[in-house]
Image 1 (cartoon, one colour):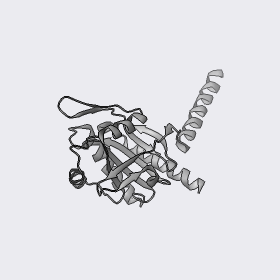
Image 2: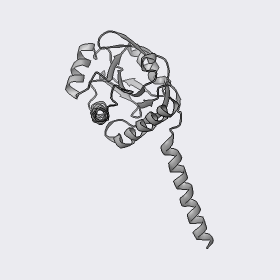
Image 3: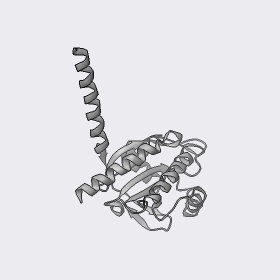
Image 4: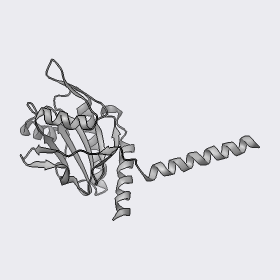
Length: 197
């Protein structure tokens, strides 16, 4: 009998924990301030995303594997959010290059066209290499330039940031991305915003 009671209590605890998890996401850290340039040459700061949920990636267009796989997964998420009427309307994507010498505005434009990025809700940003590395380091990401001119970087450098500039989730990039989880987390933040408004 005691074992049955313990099993029921354990199941109840797990159900309670999962219900709490589904209704809120912990705050990981405050998202740092920044001032970078978009492909039109306009300055963009974190303030431009106040009140918006933002999925942010750090990439470089010459990356052979993780970055294009991440962008492709984000394009799939973009399509889902477009169907819901949320893309560019409460939910924005941001990709920040840390290879500004190669990733000129024209290169980023071509990358956006090639990958299927909808720039109505997805901002591509660049800045001086040292600025972007400093920004990444504030998120506890590492970026290292290799001898061949390419980069090694943290594979956990995909951020879900709420409308109050707080990091709520950090995800693995590339083929390990869990799009269903990311969509669920975005929905959680949207509901949270609705409750507060």
